[in-house]
Structures are given as C-alpha cells and as structure tokens.
Amino acid sequence: MLRDVYELIRTATLARQQVVATYKGHRRELCPHVLGMKEGRRQALFFQFGGGSTSSLPPGGEWRCIPVDGLEDVVVRDGPWHTGSGHHYPETCVDTIDIEAPRDSYRGY
Image (cartoon, rainbow, N blue to C red; front, side, top):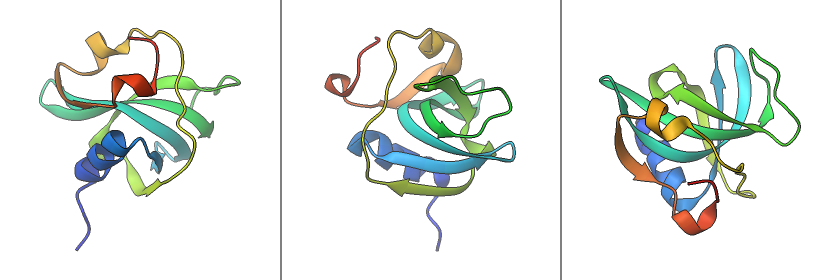
C-alpha cells in the first residue's frame, strides 16, 4: 500500500531529506521546510534546488509554496540539505503549521 504523500513529506521534513516529485508537469528537486494547512488545503513550503519549473529556477534555487495534493511520483531520498536565506512564505504559504524542519538545519526565520 502506498503511503500518503503528506506523510512522506512529513517524514522527510523531520529527517531533513530531499523530496523529488512532479508538479505541474515538471520534475522538481525539493527540500521541505514547513508543512501544514492553507484554507483547508494541505500545503508545504519547499526550497527547490533543482529540476524544472513553469517559471525559471534561479541559480542556487528558490522558495516554493506547493499544494501537497498537486504532487505526483513523490520519492524521498538522502542528500545535501538545501535552503535559502530569508523568505516571506510562512505567513502566506501555511495558515496552520503541522511540522517544521529543525531550526538548526536552515537560516531565514
């Protein structure tokens, strides 16, 4: 039986593991930082460090707020933890936080 995508991302967030998934037709390499709910929808704040995107991905990566139910072919893997400096998404990405990556694993909050 397949595990729920939300639970996979939750586990990856706590373990600081990478998530590789397809979203809007693009394969993305992501590090999950915050997971929770936004207006009744399961949502996550990721730092995308590789893969494709509808908009261009700047060198070094970018913060992405993605609805969990929009992710397909989700795989969790070990690898370097990627993050960016300051971001403005926690207030707009997730209304109710379920889990956050351990704070010593990134800067920006």
